[in-house]
Image 1 (cartoon, rainbow, N blue to C red):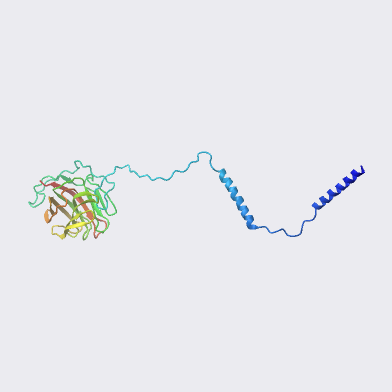
Image 2: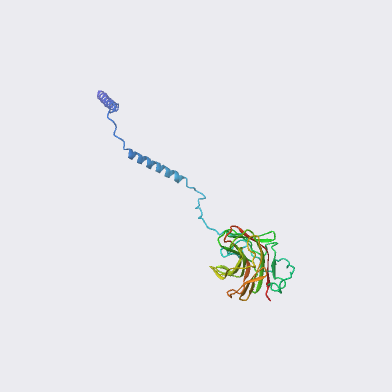
Amino acid sequence: MSINKSFLIIMVGVISLILAACNLPASTEPPPPIDQSAAETAAAETIIAQLTVVAETLVPTTGATDLPEGTQTEAVSTATATEVLVSPATTTATAPVPSPTEPPTSPPPPTPTLDANDPKAGLGEPAFYDTFNTGESWPLYEDEHVSFIVKDSNLVMTAFNPDKYNGWMLTWPVISNYYLEMTTTSKQCSGKDTYGNMVRAVKTEEGYIGYLYNISCDGNYSLRRWNGTKYVTLVDWTSSEFINSGSNQTNRIGLMANGNQFSMYANGKLIGEFQDDTFSDGRFGVVVGSANTANVKFWVDEIAYWDIP
């Protein structure tokens, strides 16, 4: 029993020494420096790992589909596509072209007493006569150069810019030999501000081509052929005493197309002739242009043509 007591006393002493050692004073030396870059790297890696875990938990489990790629669709107008017979810079627009049926024309005017040399003498009633009570026979339009509208029983032709640009508008009949005449009043105009007719206009890949008979504000006339890229001058600007020149003047201008013969008239008087056989038939219409005056206007009171027998 004494031996066991002695062993127990020894063991208690050993345990007491061990516990005493655990309560020794802390060292007074400073701790080793912390590696800041390593700590920041470790922190960043921890944040990235956490964000990755969060992102993975946000993946939808149902209804996850790829967004469709953008597609281009052609805008389709509800209006019927139509062909418009206008100047070379504009070959299509939204204005309708009169249907190639019997044209809506005004009643023919009373036959006046004509001078024997008047081109209308002996031609009878016109095949086409329009006093512009409506615009049904014309594809009225406006672009950056010109405008054609019907107002107060007149066709009002406007050229916006003095850039020598000629804009035209054609109606539907395709005709060959005829006398075409229109009565037009100038508003404020000057110099080579111009109006007139396009005849025997034929559609090509370059647009409509044909002949242009022009009258200018300063009392000149010309005849040109448009070939789709440039004008060919047949009769250069020529003065005529039969043209009423200046602003607020009315002229009755006419063009006889018979085979290859072109005869130009002003107020019932022959003012010039030329022969050319490039075009034998086609559509006809009106022309307006400005060389000197912005927003120059010409008012067409009536237009008609007579078939040549």
